[in-house]
Structures are given as C-alpha cells and as structure tokens.
Image (cartoon, rainbow, N blue to C red; front, side):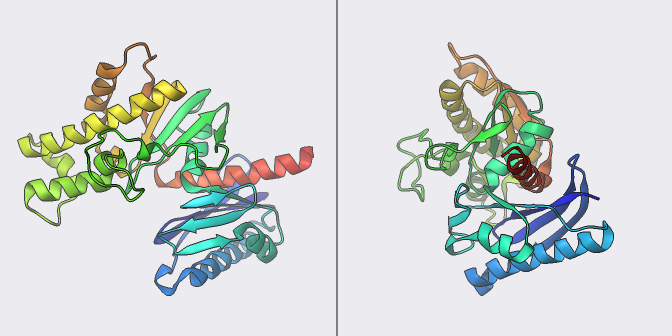
Length: 309
C-alpha cells in the first residue's frame, strides 16, 4: 500500500504515522524525544524512529514509504531543510532534511510544527473549504498559521503567523521575546495556569482547573478567564484587521474547554470589530493528530511537486 512517513516532533514526545494517499493513518506510534540526553541524542532518536517506521511499512504494508514529512518546533528554514533553533530541544542548525533523506533514501519535507498543523486543519479539518483562515493553537505559547488557498504562508523569513507576540497590553508582563504584554503572556494555557494558580492559592492548579471553576461559577476564576479572553480577543481582532480571514480556527489545550471558551470569545471579538468582517470562530477538528496529518500532507505535496517538475 502506497504511503509516506509523517513525524510530528514535540518538546518531550514525538507522534508519528504512516499516511496513505487519501490521508488515512495506516499506522500510528509515539516515542519520547530523549531531550534530557542532549540535542544530538534527539536527532538520532528522530532518525531511528523514522527508520523503524519505514521497516514497519515494509513488513505490514508490503512496501517502503515513498517520502517523509517531519514537523519540528522552533525556528525552521523549510526551504533549506534546516531545523535552525529550538529552545526546548537544544539544537541549532540541524540539516534534518538531509539527515533523514540519507537514512531513509526517500525525499523528505521539513516544516514548522504550527504551520504544519495549520495545513492539516485547513485542508482536511475545521478549515476545509475556507479560502483564507488563521489557525491559532493556545498551548504553552501562542502561534499562528496563515492559510491561503490551501497553502500556509511562511513569510519572507519563515516567521509569519507569530500572533503570540502581538503586544496587546504595553504595560503587561515581560515576555521572553523581550517585549511586554505579548498575547501569549496573557492568553496562552500557560498564562491562564499561572494566573489561576496565583488567584486560587493552589500552586498545582492549571488552566483546565480554571475552566472547571468557571463552569461552577467561581467569581475569581471568571475574572481570570475573562481577562485572558479579553486579551485573546484583542489579538485576534488585530490579526483579523491585517489578514481578513474568513475563519479563525482555535486549537491547543485551552480550546478543550469548549463553549466555556468559545461563547465568551465570540462575544468579545464581536464587541471589538468595527469595519472588519467578523470571521467564523471555530474549534480545531484534528486534535493532536494535526501535526502528523500535516507532515503527511507535506510529504505528498513534495512528491507532487517532483512529479510535475
């Protein structure tokens, strides 16, 4: 059965799949990155995992994978196939596409994790049929993927979509990027966790606990939650003003709160728009499989490009 290898590399774990021509996940697997052993060990783990996936395809699907796609965090030069930098994984300037190509003997596509997940959400997930969309996962940080006619806009330097570093409150908390009041310091799952842990007096409380407390009517939780929603709405309206997307796809851990997030968020965005067209605000559909599915799409796209060339 014709298939490609798809790898989604996270800070601590990797999700992988063998993906068929119609996007079906024919085999799924997970493995720790081993980042505690250093960047070189992470790279070797990725290469070994990919080789094991190729062997699985040969044994169980009757043939070897025809290509591979890999999504990684941090700064990525997709055109050159280089994983430029990742604070979580500790690597710099890793020629990952070349290393994987040498190990597997097939063409390899490399992509940024959020943009790759956005590609999948746009084509086969919540943005299917949307000509212009913005995918925003709310996790430890906040990033974005700008979807245009079935592709993801990377920008002139590969940095497009960094919505988490829009300043929404100039007097807000310090951000690791060097600015103050960035969106991700106020509206990410990590930001809500910090705020709720402080407000509740429970250092072990997290964003999911805050959402449950909101649903129970806790006034302190409602204040923390609404503060994050107000900041998120301000950032999304700024993005909508610049990009005019038809659909805003919200994913990540915070989106797991469902309508506890989406009902007040839609209202907060609607209150702020003036001349802008109000985009549809919808939850992401693919969950934690988006990165794998997107990596598979990158691999199939690469093959299509090579055939047409």
